[in-house]
Image (cartoon, rainbow, N blue to C red; front, side, top):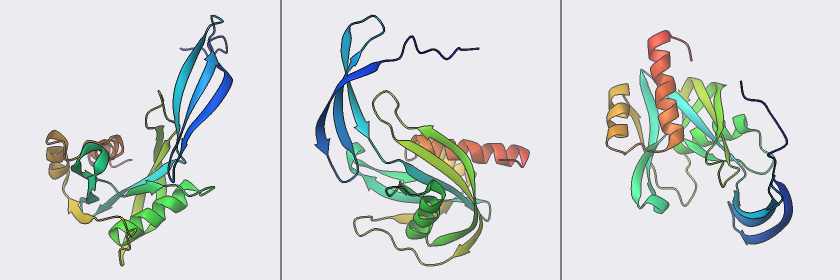
Length: 185
């Protein structure tokens, strides 16, 4: 078993703000190392996000959209960033409805993880949507989405083709696989 210890903790000596955007900020921290020396750490600050595994009639709801950082279309589970002080479960319900038009009667927490802890503090919360009711989608004005319900076999194929290549959606597909095998999620 790993021990928690403070002997390897890095103490921040100085923080230099570099960029403040609408979604992220970037800072460079000078830290004191356990050996007494110093190093720099480039840190992206992000408010966090929520995502939803929504299953309906044995299929998973996904959205396909163009992702500029990768210069390609991606198939992903519905997700979006948290507003300041927002409860992740509230954000999950909002994003599901905005992006797909479906409203969840119940949302259950599945997992939460840091997306890239080597340089970012973004924490992503994944929920399972249950008791779905169809409504009207209302994506943000800069979101252009295709909504689809895909089978488990399609999801696996999309992963092989890298149409699904983000961690949250791959994690959701594996959670779905466990559910298919055990009836538990």
